[in-house]
Image 1 (cartoon, helix red, strand yellow):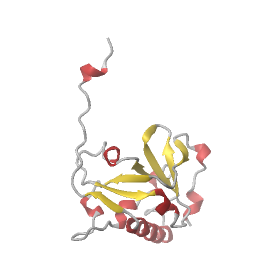
Image 2 (cartoon, rainbow, N blue to C red):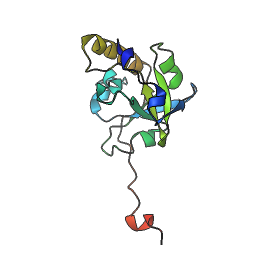
Image 3 (spheres, helix red, strand yellow):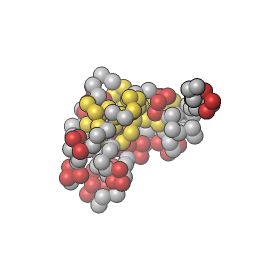
Image 4 (cartoon, rainbow, N blue to C red):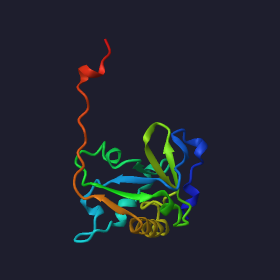
Length: 155
């Protein structure tokens, strides 16, 4: 099972405290395939992760705008409540990122690239997460341009 890949929080300095159940969190739609064609539903692919970053987790944000800030070519954003994630009873945890106050991480997700058994579990968990998710926007969310370099320097 995937639990053997769980890394203790103490070993990862960027993992902060748990995000409260009453929070809504957002995920950038980096691919149009996150949406089910012709429906207002989300595909499980929106919550699938590979094991290459197993020490972290799946990235989400505290606002739709923050979820897309690194993805100017985004296809919108989706939202899910932390309570809905915990209600799946799959051992998933949602934590703040201590290096970015707008970033949160879903931990303990099974990975798509770690054998057939874990892949099957990853498909099932991602489908359940997608079913508990709502569409925030199916349109590209503009990403503000960074300030000009001359405004960043202090004289």
